[in-house]
Amino acid sequence: MQYNIFIVEDDKSIRDMYEIAFSQEEFNISTFITAETMFDSLNKYSADLIILDLMLPGMDGLSALKKIKEDKNTQDIPVIIVSAKGDEAIKVKGLDMGADDYIEKPFGMFELVARVKANLRKAGGKGENKIIAYNDIVINDDEHIVTVGGQQVNLTLKEYKLLQLLMQNIDKVVDRETILRKVWDYEYFGETRTLDMHIKSLRSKLEEFTPIKYIATVRGVGYKFCKVNYEK
Image (cartoon, rainbow, N blue to C red):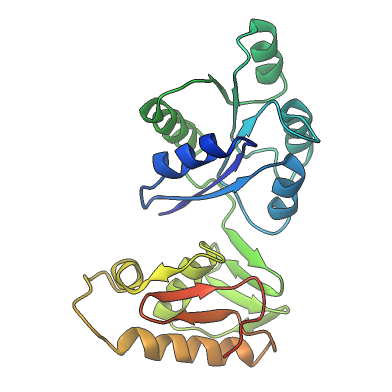
């Protein structure tokens, strides 16, 4: 199981630290400099937890928290507020507004990861949000179906798991070793055509319903699900 963590932080050095802290395979992180860009992505992708800095350019952290908790589509997502402010009143205000936790800068990576895992457990893991969607493609994990433009696509179990893994890592290359381990449950030993044939079949089935070519080959590495049409 991979958790989608959204992080809003305008300091690059701290964003880099988050990348290191959440380098474990169970976490898939997306970082944003502003709350506005985070909300753009939140309208398209699901998040299991949000880490939110208070001092941000544009919309500040407390305003973003208010917006998250007032929207019925996002109000159940756990939010951890992170700030250098040591003011007790700010901490209390954030918690009163619905934040699930509060961490003051500077903090240790082990503490941060432990807090995130605790809040994910408290929220019931991935919660009730089992929808992964981008543009016209929707994966409904409750019903175990994939639709493109509202039309159901008949995928095999391996094709389903393959698409799910790629869409959980949109615009990120997933290497062959990781795909084989997570979809086929075995380690990678050199060249294999199994993955390539499944990718070919998955592409063909998706492209029956959409002209957009989403799945790109990254030669010598693996595959990725692209936000934009890739060129063959």
